[in-house]
Structure formats: structure tokens, C-alpha cells
Length: 215
Length: 290
Image (cartoon, rainbow over all chains, first blue to last red; front, side, top):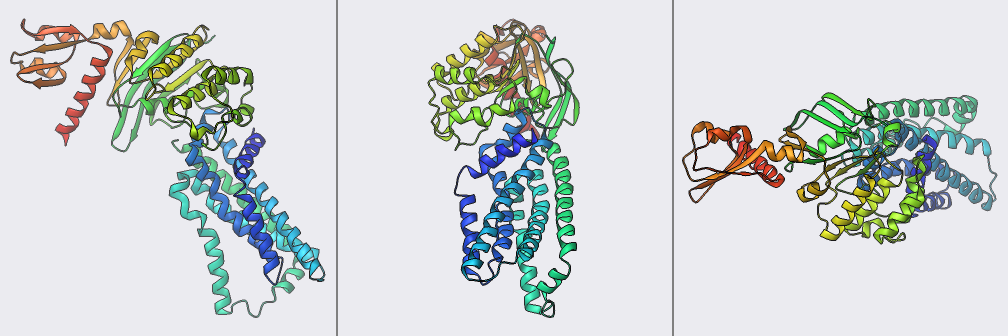
């Protein structure tokens, strides 16, 4: 039933094309317009974490939490299904961003470094996973309206942190590309592990909170 | 066949200033129970607890002879219609089979579409464009589309025109032809109960004021009218006492009849009388407290 619910959730989310299509267009635009096309993959993480609250908004608008409680599925199924749906949607948009980055780089007659693209994808997935791992327990606990600020807080913290680092020059002496390439193997293992661990822990908390929520 | 469709014992729940206090509900399989009471008396809270949508502070809720509410095996057997639709208004009516039906093992598309046809609902209509009556009919088709044994309806007839109400009552009668079926039916429109309900549960201010048959309700309560000065014992026995132009009227429990003098008129109480006067009593008590 978890798979059934995840599919149901994806269909509901994708159904109004106005949600996912603009996200894809945005990451493609980032790939085309920025000097580093791989930025599109980071943009996918930010955009999809900003959109993670949308299914909860749809739940409130259609009173779908009530619907879920009348369906023969447990609340844990709803929680796990939603995490899976959001991750699947993220992978879709990240794939579009990766393809856009490859095509844009190739059209600019630049070499495509698949290892760097892979590392960026892993890092972006970590950002996305941590962002929704922070957001979703709030949405499941109190619903969209009351948890709405959580849509922006993780991305806001990330952007503010990056801006602060740039302003203070903390990372000026660090060659990020060199650090990544020297630690690529560790990054490729550690980042997905941390991401998955964050999602699992977050889903557990969400499940407990959602099961106690009066619908 | 299970003996009991719903059994609630000592249900208590506090939400803000509202307190649901030790509510008992027993609906044997094969019967229709009307659930009535003034606004804010606790009907919806009780129904939500029975559906597993909220956790009670105390008490025990069992469906189908001992199963816990809200579990997949129970919700598979329960059809639900609430006072508001709980589907996305952007969805089309016909898409409910694909969206909702996939979750129920017993979903019957022929039954669902047959009911839509019977109600004259277009499958390509967006749910948000349906009128109140059409929405209730669609919700009924959704609730009956998976062959439930128990229907739980929270004020489905409120706001419906007489024709739509009659259609709904017809559907419920047909549902009850099967002796394994049961209905818990909350409503403000007590005439629906007169033609449908075997049992009635009256709830007032979070407490059960009456539970039993409709005939028993009429025996349990009576209306008093008169002009005489009431003794304090008589006055305190009147529920929702109202004075107008030197006259008084109110609801009493039948066993309070001896407290009244010979000039007081005592009439049988209708279901509406019981609800109206209980509501009035609740409002008076709240005014006195504030």
C-alpha cells in the first residue's frame, strides 16, 4: 500500500502541470543562464525543497487528511508514501537538471566531467534530503498552514549560510573542486548514507507525530 | 456476522473548553442509529473518534466486535460521508475510481458508476463545481462503492433540498435491506430519523442525554406548558425553561411529572422538542456561567 499511496501522491502533485513543469523549466534556465551549468542540480534541490509543502497544502484544501483516514491504509503508510513520492519527484527534476547541464556544457564545447556531475548530484540530494527531513515532521504534526514557514526555513538557512561564507571569505582559501575530487569516494558513500539516515529518522518522527494528530 | 457494529464505552475527550464526557454508544449490527444533538454538543467529535481520526483521552472504541477504529481492516468495511467533502475540488468525479478505488480490495466500479448514473452526476464534472446536494450524492457513491458493512454519516442531509434528502433516505433504506449492514447517522433533521432510525442517541453538551428507541425517547421526555408559578423543584426539573407573556414551556423527563400542578399541561415531546430544549438549556447554562 505504501507504493500505491506514493503513486497516488505523485499523480496528485504532477496532475496540475503548473507545479513540476515550472520547476523543470527553472532548473533548465539555471543550466543555460549561469556560468556553471551544474548549478542547475543545486537549484533542483532548492526548488524541490521549496515545493515540498505543496502536497500538504493540497491536503488542507481538499481535506485529504480526512480522506486518508477513511481509506484502508495506516497513517504510517501515508507518511512513508509521501516521503517516497517527494524523493521520486526530486529525482525526476534532478535528472532534468543533470541532462540540461550536460547538454549546455556540450553545446559550449566544454568537456563534461561525469565525476563532478555525480558528486554535485550526491551533494544536492543531501541538501534536499536534509531540507525535507527538517520540514516534513512539522507539516505532518500541525498541517500546512501552521507549518508554512518551514517551506522556506531550510533553504533560507542554506542560502544565508552560503552568502555569509562568501561575505566573510571563510571559504576563500578552500578549493572546493579540489576537496571534492580528493574525497570523491568518501563523498559518494557518506552523503547518500547521511541523506537516507536523515530521511528515515525524519519519517519515523513524522509517523509518530501524524499518528497522534487529530484530523 | 458480527453482533455489534459500534461499541463505545466511556469516551472522553477535551478540546479547548469543550469536554466530551463518558459517552457510550452501542449500535448492534443490522440497525440504524440516529445521532442527534445541538451544534457543538459533541456529535462530530464522537464520530471522528469512532473513525479513528482522533485519539480519545479515555474510553474504549470497538467496531465489528472488538476491532480498533482506524485500522485498514476496519476502514475497508466502513463507508463514510461527512458534512463536508474530503476530496480535491480539482478532481473529476469519474477519476475517483482510479484515485480512491485502488485502495479498497472490494471496490466495485459498477456500483460506483451505477450510483453516479442514478444520481445524474456527470463523470467529467470537477468536484469543486458540484452543488451541495450533488456533492453529498457523490460522497454516498464513494462510500458505497466498496461494499461497506457500516455507514457512518455526519449530517449528510443538512442543506439538501427535499428531493435530494428523499433520494438519500431511499439509498439508505436500500443499503439496510442487507441484515449485516448498519448505519450511524448524525443529523439535525429529525424527520429523517422518524422514517429511518431504529435507535436514537441524543447528546447534549458532551454527555449522552438519551440512548434508546425513538418510542422510548417519547416516553422518556415530555413537554410542559402553563401559567402557574413553578415550585423550585419543578422549575429545576425543566430543561430549557422558557417564559413568554406569563406562560412557560419546557422539556421534562417524564418521571418529573408529579412535580407539576393540575393546571400545567403535559404533552408528548417530539424529537425536535428534545433537541431544541436541550440546546436551550445548554445555552442558558453557558450564559449563567459567564
